[in-house]
Length: 143
Image 1 (cartoon, rainbow, N blue to C red):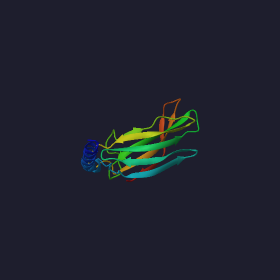
Image 2: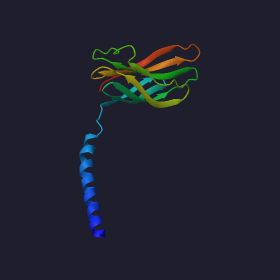
Image 3: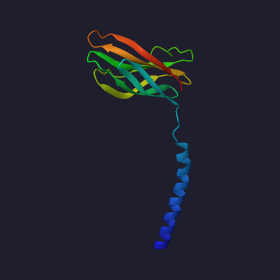
Image 4: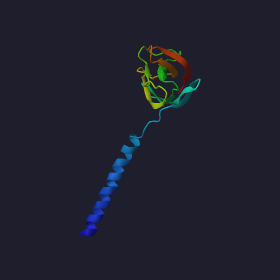
């Protein structure tokens, strides 16, 4: 009796493995194109990696600010093949950092067939006193 149940258990396990094999190959993760970026301005910077998805982009960023009033953030703009922002809302901003280092993702929509042709990563200044934003330096990144 034990021998029969062990044989049946082995047969069931083998059958499940055969069923799972095609499922796992279909569920394989698609590799999306990535590219590094490095944008510097004085003692401040934004560095990281952009990932290009079918209808969005994500920049994994590290941002440095060395002032408590002249703060920094990163703006990521999804661009068309002509180097222009794809549409008005095709950008994303990181949180503002002041006198610290910050990290995290910045997502920008690129909601057109094929997604963004490239991305502009912009190191931005944000003045806490006036609320003014200013582009300091940028880099265009291609997949």
